[in-house]
Image (tube, rainbow, N blue to C red; front, side, top):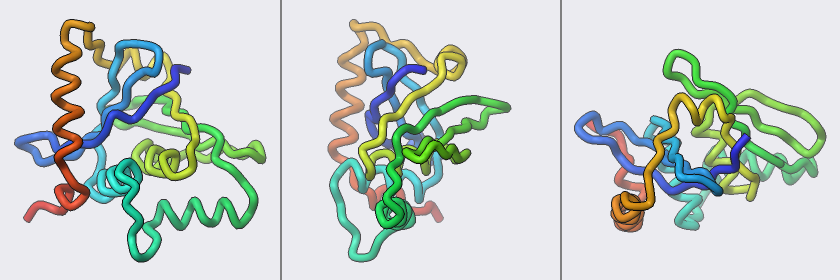
Length: 156
């Protein structure tokens, strides 16, 4: 398993489909995962430190974990089958629960849990971006700094 960091979310055009982009902490591979608009908003809120007036589902889940004195230790993106990513939530009490990567990432950002991806997933879906293309990644990061969670509203 390779540790990953969340680069951010963006909307893929022309399909208007949100993606979350992860990057190997100690590597040059990026992992794009297509996600839903609600999950994109939840991830963007967590990255920007936005506190909604009422808890979103991922905030509620974090609060329930705290109430039961259980911590989310890691999120493991374990598989990619027929274009669908799979993840496991690993808790401090030893329990593991299968979950969508988008929900897992949103929860990890709220709890400080580490995110990992399997070598197999990275080999299949990871995109290596050499150092000379790093300026393109920096442009992407700048783009992420200019969008807001409201940009992930539903298309009509």
